[in-house]
Image (cartoon, rainbow, N blue to C red; front, side, top):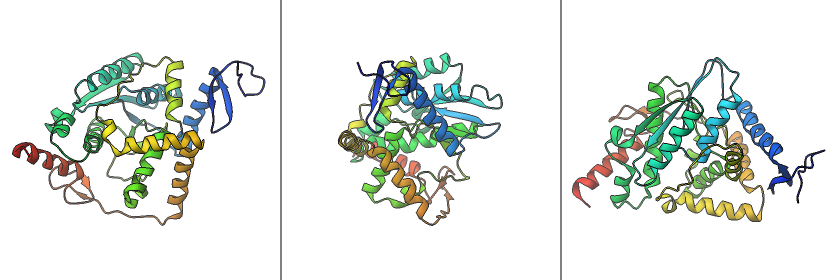
Length: 307
């Protein structure tokens, strides 16, 4: 039996952190994960006074842990309000399961829960995108539209911050995606804050995905393991596989990717980006037509002409 590496602890280990060289028991593992989240929140001054925080709750392990963690860490803060927003993107056989779990998590934690759908807001679903025959994976459309819908509804509901459940793996994948695409402007803007948008916070960004799953199991936080049927068609899935393979061979590579990116951004001169407003929806945009309206226009034209 492997025991915990912490001093004066002889309890059985539940995990081996190859990147740190530590074996951790149940208690010390929970402490370690919660410390990482608290440190990340302090480092980036994520929560101020009298905040109203909208948590993007999908019903998967990451967002379920995020909501649980915020309620746990901020339980003494009487000046804060936390509520959840779920988005039904219209993915048959998948999203109904995760939405149901999101309802369960919000109810168990006593959090007000709002559900909005692509179909009611955009008049189209991710399944529509998938059936239209675009070369791009549906994930490309889904991410842009989901972000827009959460931003709009969070603003309508009076949120001062939007908390998203991006973990260490997600952060490393996003950075590598933009390197591979050569999209350095987007890379620089990844963690930038714009007054035109509600600030987004990522309390879980220094916690590996595997540890979030184990945390959820130990804390008995309900989550669904259902996988989106379109995820394997995305470039992100290939990057995820590549980083996981590298992490197995070179422990800590995901942390290195994120820390290297942070050092790079600090070395670059500050960038100013002039945002306009979309001519169709009025949403802040870098061009005359925002990305979501551009995508929706293409899809409607494709569906209308049937090609």
